Length: 252
Length: 252
DNA sequence: GCTTGACCCTCACGCAACGGGAGGCGGGAG
DNA sequence: CTCCCGCCTCCCGTTGCGTGAGGGTCAAGC
Image 1 (cartoon, rainbow over the protein chains, first blue to last red):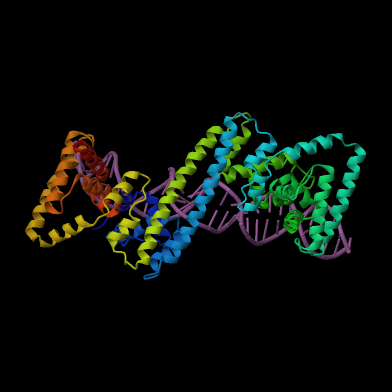
Image 2: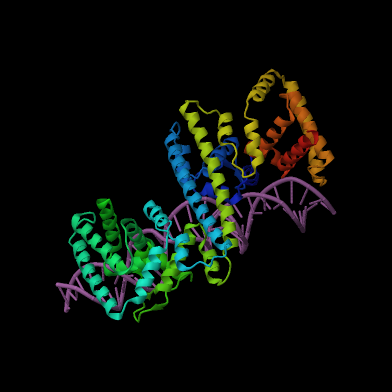
């Protein structure tokens, strides 16, 4: 049996252009042409097309499909396994997205005008890295934040300058340490992380180790914080984050 | 606070190229430039970028993000709802794929060399239309197929010719009906569907209504069958499929 | 025999969302 | 003053086709 492009296209529910494309890239070339140059497909071509579409539905790129189909007796099992992992991974990600959207919709429905803080809770961080996400959940409470603003409101200009000086001193030391190549989970870095925690506790709010790691994750999650550290020294945000985590584990 | 592209890029964990892109399409243009033409981002830009990345993670296309962000006081809820549906739909599809892959792997593990028939069962049809899928599951048994081949093997050439003639006669009548514009779920079409069922029953295998709808779906699912009908008349496969379903419902 | 109208052909540009490189300034440190 | 890193603007490449433009082909009806 011989078929024209249009017939094949309708049969396989693809467009003619798709068949042209497959022909162009050599994935599925019709078994022949009419004198006028019309493509002629036969049953074997249809079978191949069926397989192509099936693999495509499974998410394989065309190039890989060509490899699979043109490698006779090649075992598709590894491909299948790989694809299986890939798909379950994607499903997980999509589910996370759906959950996040539901959260966002919930927030809208309650007519809560999202403050920047809340928006951060909702939209904050979808980094595949679970650290941040987990920390964000634990750190959800805004008590510390309130405490911080309350205290901050009472500081004088001198207080702020002292704070700034202490901060800068600490900043110089951790930058030097990083430049020197000391590991972020080494004792010196951990000591400076601890110092940071006490700086925060003294100036803003009681910073438990748990809160501290939450804060550290926020340094990576909120671009404004990250930018602040990255401006001091590229890589500092990540370095500090790791040091704080190491310190928290160390003291636990 | 002002930041350079590089700082912003590191902060938001995107590439500089991405920021250039957002600038190009007007999604996120830096609030200013230095005399030398360097992009200068401020805190507001960073906030916007954060939102952009968040929506991106939720799977929104950039264009839609622009709409959402640039429509102040616009409610993102409808967008979110739409996106939610879209994502759950995709999850469903992916799950089907995973199931199909598991089936395929199972088949490989059992070292069953897939015959074309089995391959069809595995890879047969991922049409979003559930009809086909559902029917495929019900129709999974190969009893009818065996019965069919057994009978077919005993037919003489004359039998085949008679079969062919009956088929062609039926084909002419349903084609005429379709050309006349009779609805596929109308009484005439249903009658011809019924006739088709009895033709199949007489020549190949006992064709219950259930099997018949399965067969009908296969006419749409297997390109070779579809091509056969489409060659007779474009749209015939779909027409017949609908008629058969209507007939089955009618008799139920 | 000639005109429709439905197909078919081959270019060839366009899409989303960037990646990556070329070639050339700008700017802070030593 | 030189270095080198970072920034700039083009501009081509990717994937899997969509969507014409411009032109040949084929079966049917007058």
